[in-house]
Length: 211
Image (cartoon, rainbow, N blue to C red):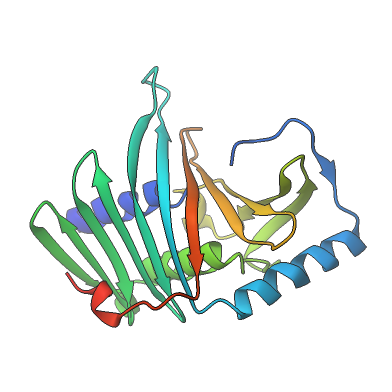
């Protein structure tokens, strides 16, 4: 149980938008146009390969904890988070299983046996694809920014709120692709992940998702 809690907090750290000060609320019509664009992009996306930079902001620290690595996604639900700095670390979601390799120490968790882990898996897949527009699961707010779009998601599930009070996703204006993910914790600490060098629908082997 203790180990599972550690991994859950890791997932919270992984899920993480610079908040733009110039924001305008989207009208209902603008929301429909925007979500249709994002969902169309998601439907056309079979694979994603991208570098990422993760900043973990803690109230007790004056500077964020910086991590960098590579994200690989393959539809429908395979995800690899491979950290290169400050140390080698792998987190893999595939076929209802969570695999973790922490400096040679490996763990495996069946997502089917843990509803909260399964919810996090679904959340991660949908956030990477930008496919999270579920009013039953989240209170959602839509904004237009100078760089594109910002959407905030406040979980309705009480268990999820214990780990995250809100998620913020930023999207490009033209393609509706996710460029940043921000996770805000109940104590106001937050994690910010920025994607770069994104490649879509390139060939990704299934062996990529093995420890």
